[in-house]
Picture 1 (spheres, rainbow, N blue to C red):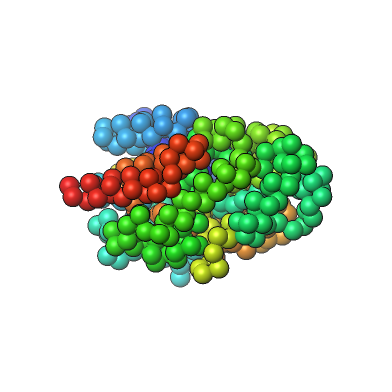
Picture 2 (picture 1 turned 60 degrees about the vertical axis):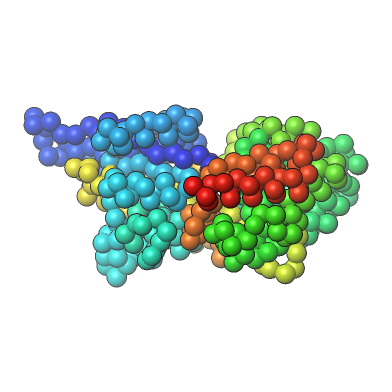
Length: 426
């Protein structure tokens, strides 16, 4: 995901000089998506051939550099025609409130809302601000999703077979998950579970899913709002699940310091039977190990009390610079890139789920299995309020320490709550 990081694209807009003809307009787009630069360039060439307007996709990587550039560009009044934001909803809100991002309501609602209705609602929701939102943003749609992301558990079907497990049956509970992982590790000598937990957002996404399953979405949100403490017994149960994973012996030895790319590489090479990753992993695994036989499955339940919610929504979105002299052309381009022909092209080239409602027959089999989970998606950018980033940082670090056996769930819960109370008093 590509997630945790607040990333906004920026660039120096190549505006028209007095000597240029009107048809010499150029749309500049800055982004962070290394896996899509070639596909974007092909789309830019197609658009120029069709409309006579040059489109330039500028790639900035890694994301933290991208983030620094966009912040500097915003301060200098130098944002490009189109850019993106990843991270907390309040960040998007701050850019909207500062007047940097165009409200797309009138475009989305034109022609009886044809453009708006083309998107998966769960995906579009990430860039929508509703009435009376906690960020003080004028209600509206402030971005255009170009794909959909779903976080899932992943299992190696070939290793399942070698371990004597049925590759068509995946674990549905935490107990079954631990049992399957331990049996595979004992018989094959591979790790039971690998994940990039050196990146705290992956831990946070999984903790969020288990928290909602254990206490329900309402209580989870009320914790963020301060009505329930992180020392509540149900939060202790959430944190204890990570201690249980450590005690089971199924975790890769360096999981708490491993970045996601290392985890993806290890899983693609058959070094672990389970992992936790996003739908973008389809493209990653295709590049790393084209013959890898694997499948996705939803969160192993820790409780039957509440339904499972899956972390996901818009994987990547583009925003239009409200001050761009090319903003009308920028909107037209985004309408074009989110039409069915271009979305099908991106599916084929990048193996990402489309942002718009599209025939499932077009999707590769491995992606088609994820469509059923769209109705269960949850994401910080659709919650009424986000947790303070400082509290999240303490939680993520605490989860890593639990996994390493340094701290107990109770101690971590107390540290998170103390941080939240200290921030709330300010």
